[in-house]
Structure formats: structure tokens, C-alpha cells
Amino acid sequence: MSDPLTAPPSEAASAAPSVASDPSDRSSPAGSGPGCPDAAGSGPGCPAPPPPELFGWEFASDPYPAYAWLREHAPVRWTELPSGVEAWLVTRYEDARQALADQRLSKNPQHHGERGAHGKGKVGIPGERKANLMTHLLNIDPPDHTRLRRLVSRAFTPRRVAEFEPRVRELTDQLIDGFQGRGEADLIHEFAFPLPIYAICDLLGVPPEDQDDFRDWAGMMLRHGSAPRGGVGRAVKKMRGYLGELIHRKRLSLEREPADDLISGLIRASDHGEHLTENEAAAMAFILLFAGFETTVNLIGNGTYALLRHPGQRATFERAVRADDTAWLDTAVEELLRYDGPVEVATWRFATEPLTLGGQRVAAGEPVLVVLAAADRDPAKFAAPEVLDLTRAENQHLGYGHGIHYCLGAPLARLEARTALTALLRRLPDLRLGTDPDELRWRGGLIMRGLRTLPVEFSPNADDAPSTA
Image (tube, rainbow, N blue to C red; front, top):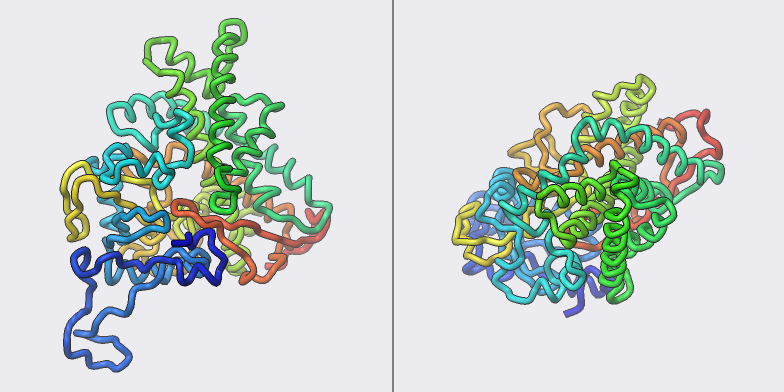
């Protein structure tokens, strides 16, 4: 079967699997029964409308109607993915929150009932097993998860993130300087992508002369389905080799040149009895880069696109920028995270024992995927969830997860997004889309949600141009 994430649009419709893998014994769609009073198929006793198709180009552009169907008719649904792996999709907020915190759902792929799926690249990050990068926070459970998270969390305290803010502002302004004079740019490749790459490289302690290599490797990983065959795995292998060399160099130089970066901190922890292996240190640095940069790329890209598509909300955002109302801007970033967040589906979980989730029996070894994008538009939790409301006060979204696996780098991502969006609308006040929205394409992939490109136009050297809002 051709993969609908990489097939041409004409093939994607036929290649995309139906949401239902075996509806007769895996689900109980609501609304089925005799005596439907409405010829249109609605009303009490009517059968549920046919399930939507998932994972094609149309779905990638706007998955929210399909997620609405799932929430209403099959909130926990056994589904075949484009890779051929089957998993439970969880789409209602309460079920999602329960699953994210349930420690019977392991992050360790060894609990997957389909043996070998991880090694074949069907589950997890392509190439991570071959590159000996398995021992990171997305693949382990307590007590190892607790130990490693404690070590790394020191780099993401509120104080450390606040200290990093001037550097984020500096990077942001440098990137805008690079295209401001042209009057046009691709905000993904020229702004949203390089900003978090350079920021996380600084945090990790990657020397400036090596950061462009990291940018190339990260770019290959970001391309996912559109990358050359095996390209992601090769990029992961190169990154692993470099991280091993960097850890070795830093270990040798720490005594004569103390450093305060994250990799140096991991080395010091290992040398002081924290039992951190070289593989663990490399895997932790790798996942902070991999998870930290793509989520922020998508948050900045999706957030900018949402503001450009909602002029009233943009005007309110710009007023807050002029007033330097940081607290309001933080609230706005939370709504952008909820409305069209950077992580569509939480990373893989596997049942370690039989359990019940949303009324469905999940067998030991079965994968569970929590659809954050669906949960964050659940009308049972959020008032008018399809509306972008930057003043939304009650906003306990799941955009960065929940429970012990809550995103460690979320404070830094929020800072980068607020800084980036503020600088864009302050320095390019007449910023506008450079193409028809229907021409934009979203990257295919299971976990992340983000635009491939975001062409924009503005007045060259536009700091003082009038706003279009």
C-alpha cells in the first residue's frame, strides 16, 4: 500500500486508510440503530455518518473535522496508520488527560506487542536505535526517567530561561535583519526554523562554528516524508557521531575551562556519581535538540499563520506589543498552542497490562496515541473551541502534554514564540501572506503539525510601515 503521507494527492485519497480498522469488534460508534427519522441521516436512532479518511493531504491541511467526528462517534478508536502499525487513537480531552498520566501506559517501545516495529522505523524516531540513542526521555519510564529528567531540568528553570531571553531577542533580530530589506521571505526556512536551532545549540554548548552542521541535520529530520530515502536515519547517525565527539572534548576541557552549558552539566553530573552513561548523555542532548527545535518551529509558524488569518485577533496582539504587556502576550501564546498547536499527537505509549480507556478495553502490548490537537478542541472542555480567542482565560490545554512526561522545554519554547511573534509584528507591521492560503502545504507526519513553507510579504525595511490590521 502506498503511503498517503508521501504519495501524490491523487494517490493519497485512495491510499489513506479509513479510521476504522475493524469496527465490528473494536468500537461502538454512537447513534447507530433503527428508526432514523431524518433522511439526511441525523437525529436519534440514526446510524453514525461514515468515518472520515485520515492521513491524506486534505486531512493534513485541516484535520479538525475528522477529529470532531472521532470525538463524537469513536473517541477511543483502533486505527491502522500509514506505516501499517495499528494503534488506539484517543481524542476526547478527559480520556486524553487520563492516558497521558496513566503509568500503565509505558513510553518504552519494548512493551509494544508488534515486535520489531521500532527497529523498522515504524515507531519512534527513524534511526535512533541504530545510532544508540534510545535512552532519552521519550523512550523511558521511572525510575530512569525520574533520574534523567532531574538532571536536565536544571537547564529549564524559570531563572535559567529568563537569563536566556536576551540571547533569544538577539537571534530574532539578526534573522529579521537578514530578510527585512527584501520585502518578502519564507518565514519557516528563514525565521521559525533557524531561531530554535541556534538557541538550543547555544543552550547545549555547541560551538558556533559547528552550528550550521546541526542546522543541516535538523533540516533533514524536519522534512520527514519528503526527505530522501534513509535521509533522516543518516542525519541522526551523523548527529550521534558529532555528539559523542563533543562530549569527549568537553570532558577533557572542563577542568581547565569550566562551562555552564547543558552538555557540560550532564558531564559534571556523571562525574559526581549520578551514573549517567555516555550513551545517556548523547541521547539526552539529541532529544532536546530533536524535540526542542521542531515544536518551536511549528509554534512560531502556526502561530504566525493564525494571526495573519485572524485580523481582529492580530490587531489585539499588536496593541499588546505596543503596550509591552508581557502577561497578555503570554496568555495569547497559550491560546495559539491550544488552537493549532505544534504537536498534533503525543509520542507513543504502550499498555503494560490490560486497561480500560474511554470505555474500550486496551490489551497489554497495544499502542496508544493521544491526539492532543483533538483534545484541545473538545467542546466538553473549551467554550467555542473552534474560535481563536487570544483573551481565553480558562485554558488548561494539553499542547505540551500532561503528567510526568510534560514537555521539559516548554518554558523555552514559550519564550521563543512570544519573542519571535512580538518582533515580527513590531518590525514588520504590514506583514501579510505572500500566497493564497489554499496553496500552503502542511508537512506529512504523525506526531508534529507544521507548515512546509510560509511565504510572506511586507514593506522593505518596514519598521515604520503602517499596520494592515
